[in-house]
Image 1 (cartoon, rainbow, N blue to C red):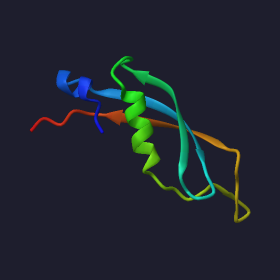
Image 2: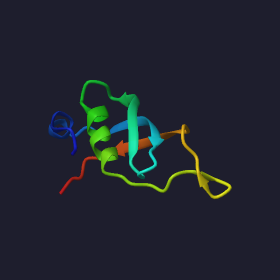
Image 3: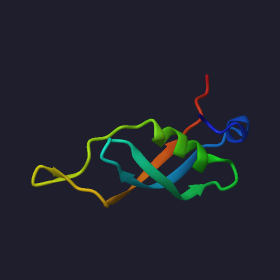
Length: 80
């Protein structure tokens, strides 16, 4: 899922995501920022985060909805 344009240039990237944890343990995320811009790191991160499942936030043992978390995600080119 590494952005092809960035991978071809050997560029690493960083994305800040704003995510809501859904009751089904999936994440609904939007891109808050991406660096460097214009290399599709944001859309790639959205794809990655669509595969992640997490336990919902709880308060007094009950799931809490409507809370948003900010998550940083780093892309690093692997040199083989």
